Amino acid sequence: MSKAHPGFKAVQKKIASKGGYSMKVAGAILASRTRDASAKAHEANPRLDRVKGKAKGK
Image (tube, rainbow, N blue to C red; front, side, top):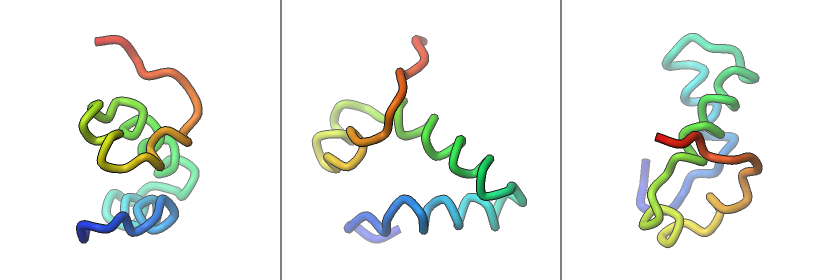
């Protein structure tokens, strides 16, 4: 991925093709990983804040 975010749909498509998942499952994987992203990642990419739901506690 480049420094600029390619977009969530593009990342979802990449996850689906690489992992052999459906687009729905790939979207769930992406959303889960996005929610668990670090505060520094959220600061660098404010789009991460648009993903709904709560992060799982560790």
